[in-house]
Amino acid sequence: MMRAVTLVMGIDSSTQSTKALVVDADTGQVVAEGRAGHPDGTEVHPDVWWSACQEAIGQARAAAPGPVEAIAVAGQQHGMVTLDQAGAVVRPALLWNDTRSAPQARTLVARDGADAWATRTGLVPVASFTVTKLAWLAEHEPANADRVASVLLPHDWLTWRLGGQQAKHTDRGDASGTGYFSPATGQWLPDLLAESFGGRRPDLPEVLGPNQSAGRTPDGVLLGAGTGDNMGAALGLGIGPGDVVVSLGTSGTVFAVAEQPTADPTGIVAGFCDATGRFLPLVCTLNAARVLTTTATMLGTDLAGLDELARRAEPGSGGLVLLPYLDGERTPDLPDASGTLTGLRRGNATPENLARAAVEGMLCGLADGITAVRDAGVTVRRVLLIGGAARSAAVREVAGTLFGVPVEVPEPAEYVALGAARQAAWALSGAAEPPVWALRAERSEPAHTEAGQAVRAAYARARNQVHGI
Image 1 (tube, rainbow, N blue to C red):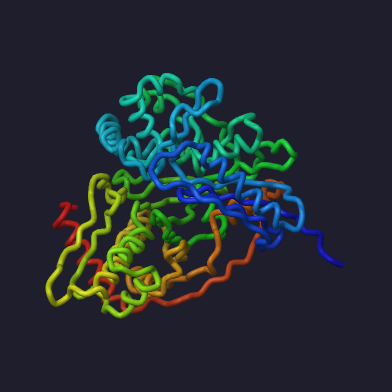
Image 2: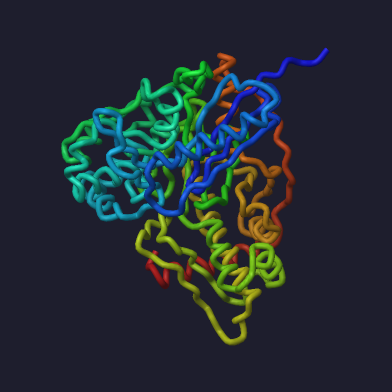
């Protein structure tokens, strides 16, 4: 007798696109999918996300073998979505990778002190966070700031639209990336928001528990609470103690599940919440996969060609070191920085060395992130390497050299969307824990660790020489 299949949908609304997966709620098997692109840039009108979401959902539903019973959205973190009293968008959303609010971030830290911010919010303000973007809005567009009646994050706004624009909801995970939420208490900090937003007190969405519902769509489909993209990836991978994820997408992230909140006054480790009721200490770099695509373009090749070139070079790239801060940087906090290539000599000026320097430079920043997470008290037993750039053989080889622990590369999948689907299945079931889905991964043991240590030391020297840190 055939098993009755329950289908759920997970949506990943990322910087570059919307992905929608229809998934078997019991096994995690993907049975249909859809995708639609987003425009490039650091600010975008949220209507673009809605159009892409509708297109991706339509594709996935058309290919699905049956009706979808629950949906959840995982969205890019930190994006500032401002609505007026009627629910209309006040201005285009500022995205996580928009660095114009760096001066306001410095002002907020100077006002209250890094220790106080870390203790209250788990974060030290940098230009990525929502609170700094609201401070920028108050200073540079006060007329728009006066119109703001409520503030949402990208996943909040999409869930609200999917629910027919009824009640506004969020979850602990995405809320913890705003800079006006306490991970320790699970509560908003409206006074802190008002202090940073020129005294204004916009409404904030209700914070739901991990398996709670945000209502239903107009056609009756259950809505999960949704979450941020990094929290979605953690849920999709089903990570546990000792697992550290390194995600190589537009940004690079290092994160792990923890039982207690973290408060790092250096600001390197962001003390987020996860999507299960626990915590998600995280380090983020602005520059990841695009470092490779940009370098490939410089070399007149594609990513496959870059991969081949990098694998021909020796560890250390013949002395070339790339500080890959092509779009400024968040970790370290250098929003106005640019990329720097050091150590260039006639004898090492080859396409192979430049290709490998790009891979090593991208991964050195993430290796520093692993060290920072470990220093915050997280046990690191293995690294799960995900994201588009994880498919590169050169990236996998260099990661094993630099990270110093076993590296596992899960089979390619849309783990953010899978995490959203798992959350939808969890809300639908009403169970105490999310469903268990199998994870298949290719494992490699650490190799050439001495060479990796030398690469990291050269990277640290170059960073100190150029930026004094």
